[in-house]
Length: 142
Image (cartoon, rainbow, N blue to C red; front, side, top):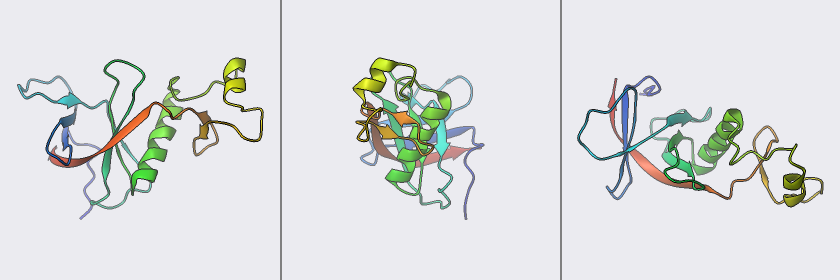
């Protein structure tokens, strides 16, 4: 059975070792439990099965960065979905601005061997600060 969790009021994730808890929920938190709040849930277009894995992504270039739970067929699929979401949100810590001539030069975008990655639509991105780890879905509240 394939359950659509995108409309859930509360999703609770935990690291496989039972350590930290991550929660995606609407509205304010009145729980007394300590957990880390997730900014949004991103589901890859390729994630079709209930057993497709979840990952927490964040950009480690700031204090207390937003956390994103991403579901994909595998790590590579989730990674691509996260990078594409960064491009869609125009996240300046990931997307390389072509108008910034120094950045174009630094990343070698004018050469045949650039030192950056590209999103699925060809947008140049700097993925060096992206951090990721796997989590498991523990609870769903509709």
